Image 1: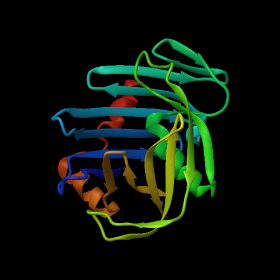
Image 2: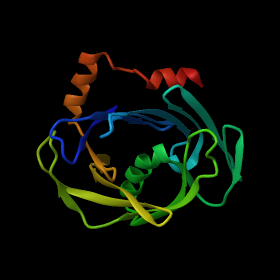
Image 3: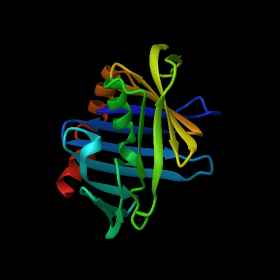
Image 4: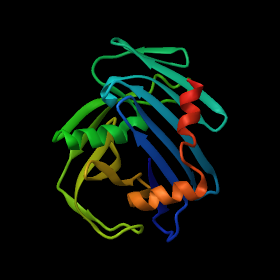
Length: 211
């Protein structure tokens, strides 16, 4: 499981964390951070898939106490009972980081897809999206040394650029969330932090059991 720390542009200390884990059959994401107005964002998603995030079959999404479940077939998606037919590739928003890593690994210069909001009652939010790789660049991370030669990938949703991702050695090492930036901890640091806090298997196993 990878851990990223969130930083706001005017803060020198982290304001939250993002945990992700991807294997052949699932992509898990847990995000929690403080907003500038004092609010708390605490979301969790588990996407079931068949080898690729492009071939996902279902997801469970939690936003605080609210939970929604989505499924996908060859004709469209259903979220909390709301059906939307579509053509082409559709990806839940919390699975986009897996798609970014996948496109860099497969040497794709751009990927077009449909961006899906997971929240209950918002299945209508299936919007055109595009990932595009630009020039490689170095990343100055506050949690590690400068990371050289990162693949830079920009996400646009419905014609507006939203996130920017940097990928190194097959993993997303930093993300600009258009207001905050998250940076991945070194793998050894993340491992020892999870062990010290008792986070091994936390969250991810709970959502697996809930399905």
